[in-house]
Length: 245
Image (cartoon, rainbow, N blue to C red; front, side, top):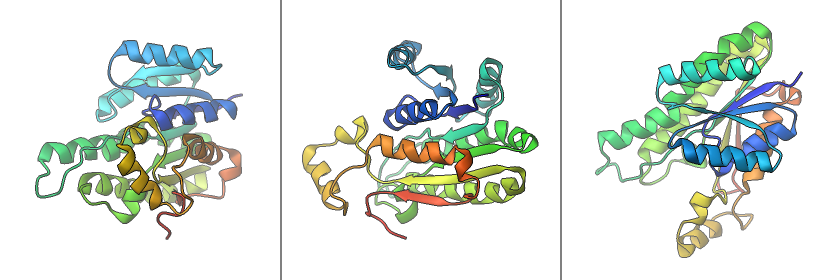
């Protein structure tokens, strides 16, 4: 029987690649989205035309109640969630001197509190069934910090703290919890950066290029698999050598 995977924010560049990789590895895949239904319908139709069936659920991941409803819908459609990928995230950059409370809370709620909201719905069930995979998407900037991203860096660092704590609670019950910390990946968002700025970013990456969404997605698929059962509480950097720990 296929296992069920839920990817938050699955319609972005990274999320789309994750959904495809999980389907290719035999999972039934669902994703959350915010925004207009028309765009979501167009995305699911495009995915289906490429051979990827994804169940899309509208969900504001900053809302605990929305998370309850979304996971209930996924469970009704496919069955209990076996794999959760906490991928949803935003940026609201600004130097700390000028950062507003709204900028701080928007990022903390979307990038960190959402992981609590979503994981809370599935973790106990995973433990009871004796299998579960939680994959939390952090960032290179959660490891090293980044000028103008106090909110983002704090949230992404917090993500790994959550992973390490939950990994200890799930370890004897067949549930692993790991963090992936990507560097700069060639998504539409990064490719939209001015070429001059983008070239400066690439110059700071030892392998001399941006990462590919499929490279992050491949790591997600591994962490979702049976083969990853001995890895838990880990933070896996995938950044082309830009930051080594």
